[in-house]
Structures are given as structure tokens and as C-alpha cells.
Image 1 (cartoon, rainbow, N blue to C red):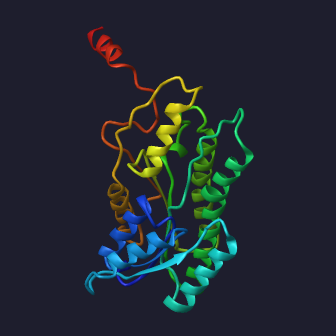
Image 2 (cartoon, rainbow, N blue to C red; image 1 turned 90 degrees about the vertical axis):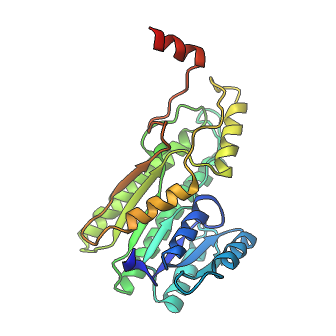
Image 3 (cartoon, rainbow, N blue to C red; image 1 turned 135 degrees about the vertical axis):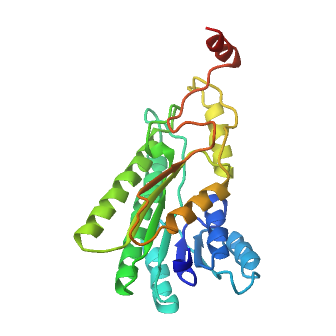
Length: 274
């Protein structure tokens, strides 16, 4: 991580959960972070907490930004260019889930997921590429994806979310291809965690358990901690210039990449005795 010390990273969705954990970890390694989110109060709390650290830590700059607003994103990158000398690392972490069936879901829910999970991610990646190119920086873009981008979730009403995360996988490889074609050395990595213990995950499982068309009532899953994902980001960034971790998938020990409905304890006992 020594190569990134004193350099600038932009982290989207930085006010809580995975984004917040990534900001904390980057600052520990001496990276200066521009933290983007919509909740100004949460961003201020994060900056006040981290900017009290010693000189061996990075500094946090906060920008209230809805990344689905293209002009707002452009303004942030313009500020980073003029004030901080350009971005070296982009962590596209902002994302959302709406419980919305393909059979009777709302267009506004589908559009919201596509706008945030796919289009905003692509806009931020485009602006990062242009900033890095202007400033002659061989930077690193990390897309925080999901195991939902690798397989269909078995839960009712989660398929549009699946679609957005599958799109992120294609966009990662597509971005790598286009960078290769123009001779750029900018890295692009996809990080796909399984279930992570966040407020968002809790709300998802509450909704799934209330879903009348769900065939199984789900309990809180085994889940990664947000720090686990932040540590994975550090592992990706710590590679030498000649090495790219194109895809990293992490799940909590005891889970699988493909989601499966869990049989009852009685069924498991029967299987073990057969």
C-alpha cells in the first residue's frame, strides 16, 4: 500500500456500511479520501472522527453528492482535479436494492436500481478515467459488486437487482478492454462480497420474510463484516503494477457463492442419517 500513501481516493456511498469501513481503512494507510454520499450529517461525523488522527493517517474531504446526478459527479471530479491534483483510486461502492418483482414491480424501482447500481457507477468510472488521464496517473478503479452478479438469487423479487449486478461484471471487463485498446495502465477490479452485515441487509431480509410469494421464511444470514470488505479492497490495491486482481469474490465462512434455500434442521438430520 506504500504506493498509494499520500494519494487521493474517491469513495462513493461513504457515509455508512461498507463505504464507511473502506474510508476508515484507506485513511489508516495514509490515503487521502474524498468521501461522497447524500447524508451530510453522517459525512461530517466521519470526517471529524478520522481527521483527528495523526500525520501518518490520510485526511478526509467530504462532498455531498447524489451520484445519479451526472453534473454533481462532474463537479466533484473537477474539484478534485483543481484542488488535490487528480484522483488515483476510485471505489464505486454506492448501490441499492429494491424488493420488486418482475411480475408486478414498479418501473420507478427498476429505474432507481439501474440508475444507481449501473449508470452512476459508469459515470463515476468515466470521470475517474478522464481525471487519471489528464493528470498522467496510472490509477485503480474498484467496483464493489456482489455475488448476486454471479448467480440468480432464489428469493422472489430480487431479479432486477441480479440484473444490475450482472451488468457491473460486464462493465468491468468492458472497461478493461477499452483501457487496453487505448494503451492505458489504469487497473479495474471487481469485488464481489456475499451477504454483509449492514442496515441495508437487515431491511432486505425483513422485506423478503414479509413477501407473500416467498416460499421460505429466512432468518438473518451468516454475513461478512464491513471491515472484511474493506480489507479485501486493501488486498486488491496492494498488488504491484504488473498484477491485477480482476475479480475477487468473498463470502462468510459457511456460505456458498450460489444462494440456496436452507432445509429445515429435521431435513438435515435425515440427510446425515441416510
